[in-house]
Length: 237
Image (cartoon, rainbow, N blue to C red; front, side, top):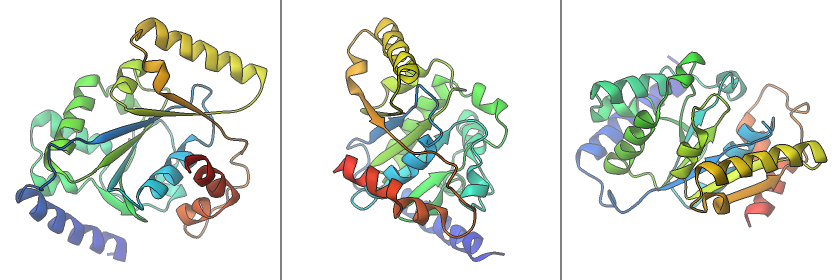
C-alpha cells in the first residue's frame, strides 16, 4: 500500500473515534461557501483549491467538488478509493456509521476533501435532498467549520443549491461576451430567488488560463505559491 493509503486508514480510525465521542462544537453552526462560474471559467477548480488552502490556515475546511469531468484525481495525484457518489449512497441508505463516513474524506495539504463523482451521470442524479442530508450530517457529526462546494453546470436547479451558501464566489473574465453571461445569470437568480440572494455573489475576475499548468510535483503547492495563488491571496486579504 502507498503511504497515502496507510495514512488515510489511520485518519479514518482517528476521526471515527472522535466522532463517536461527539465534538464539543457540534451544532454551533457551519459556514457553507459556494463557488460557481456562470461563464464556466477554466480556473474555477484551481481557484477553489487555493481558496480552501488559504482558509485552512485558520479553519477546519472540507472541500467538495460537484463538477463534471474535472480531471481532479490525476491533476492532484489523488489515491481516493471512495468519492462523493459513495458518500451519497450511504446517506440515502442511512448507513453512515462514523468510520464508513470518514472513509470518503481525504487530506490534501491543510484541508480535507471528498473526491468528485467518477461517473458524471451521477451528478445529474444528485438532488436537493441529497445535498441537505450531506450538510446536516456534516454539521451534526463532524468538526468542520467550513465546507467549500465547487458547483458545475451539471447541477440541477443551481439557485436552490447556492441558496444554502452564506458566501458565493463567481470566477469571471473581463469582456463584453462574459458580461452578457454574468448579467443573464444574475437576472435568473433575481427571478427565481427574489429575496436578495444575488447580493451574496462575489464576482472574482481571474485573468488566468490553464494552459500553463503542467503535471508532476505537488499540484496544490504549485498553485498556492504561483502568481495565481498570490493573486487570490491578495483578493481575499
